Length: 192
Image (cartoon, rainbow, N blue to C red; front, side, top):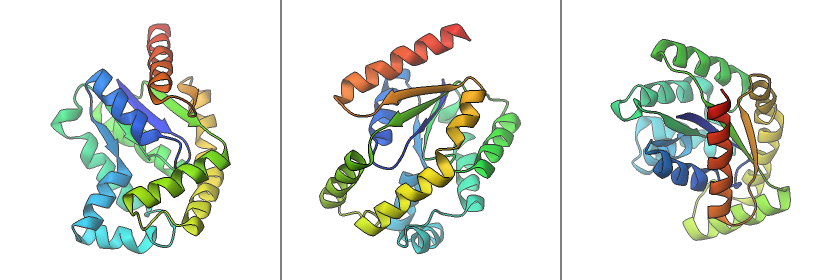
């Protein structure tokens, strides 16, 4: 199973990706986690990424594409993977298409989680407080949501046209949301 999990910041992508990874016994790959690891350990990649994330900007595509391609080529991805936080714009969709072609892989589905802006703001404020994340200030959060609406949300139409999009309400009981996703994925895979 090769999946993308998409949606605005704070919708629960990471939580659901972890549950799905356990269910399907595949790795959940979060570009955000990779960057946060590098930032924490002050690697050159981390310091470069930090210069963007602290301003609420996204890390440049060239840097992101490189880390995603390297990660998808690792041994633990042979039976599938879940990508969380990628692609974020049309050029990354093209880059992912190219990567998958080079790796001889194809995408099985795109899960889009949805929630209202007020729910997202509340969740991210709580996350910032609990985790002490420097990239979750009110100003940065607002900018990230605007960037998502402008650059990433339109990608859902691309995947819908390809017949890969599965939309799920991201508000409610975490396990119920996960079960809904699994049921829709299993139905989608059987249909294809």
